[in-house]
Image 1: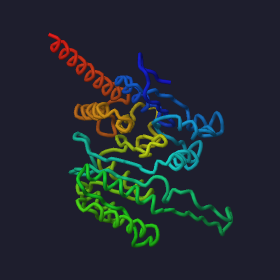
Image 2 (image 1 turned 135 degrees about the vertical axis):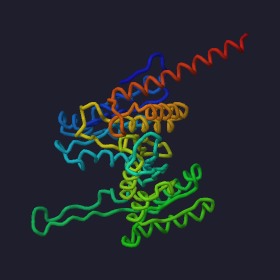
Image 3 (image 1 turned 180 degrees about the vertical axis):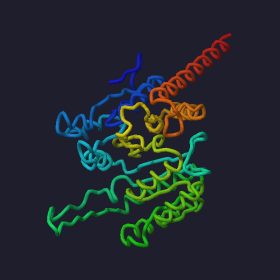
Image 4 (image 1 turned 90 degrees about the vertical axis):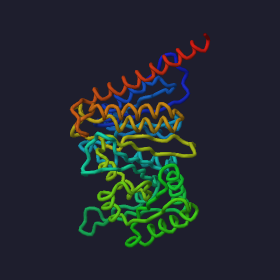
Length: 370
């Protein structure tokens, strides 16, 4: 358990550092939390490959009941295919999305000035809104006649009207707070059932938002257009698989997977939401001290915004932008600093800003008394 001094806790979060670089980036996020000194209890667990090696299970049998006791879940990364296939290690994440009704996945992609990108000119500020609890990741199907020449697999996708309506409507509402433009990622020219339903629901909901520009792109054409003209997109909405792919593309165009956050949201707050960086466990750089902690810090920022700490969320983003402009960054975004050096800079920036704000408030109070 990570505790702040002289604090009465208002929120509880469960922290899962996980595998690979997960522990490294979470260490830096913990420094950041300590500098913020918020009334948030943070309980750390060893779920992932370490838990599997000790118990034969990636997570405890009652892990769903355990996480229900918290206001939010903060994850570093999961997976080490040298020990266990990813489809086994990541299964608890999919189960949490479904059983905790985290039907909404938000993945923002924004280019920060000072970060090199694959494109000569990159102006991208996109919010990818992904259906997160059904679709292509519904775990319906199987492998039949395994090990024989006649072996075959069936993988079915589930697209419900209710599931589509709530995520598409969220996308339109989100666009009203941005640039009033929503794009649907579809493939209804080839997938004539599920994707046709997506098109139909999208068109119906678009009628409710005459102030928002609505357009559809086939998935392949959308991918090409994001590379050619990323600035034209505002909010992109689509299925579990399509927006999983699109969100990786948008954050790569923006500069690096290492700086991208993700939020798996239960908007009704009936169960906890989960926040994580987009990057995986990155086993090739684990332990080298060069992984980028910014993605985890931005995921933490999204979590704080969700929990009601808007000022602190903004302060984290400000600290990150300062580190980028001063080139206190890791190698993935053109820097030479270590993971710890980046984390120290951001934590110290936050601590300094909070201290100066506190001093200003004290001076103002004294002046009023005089």
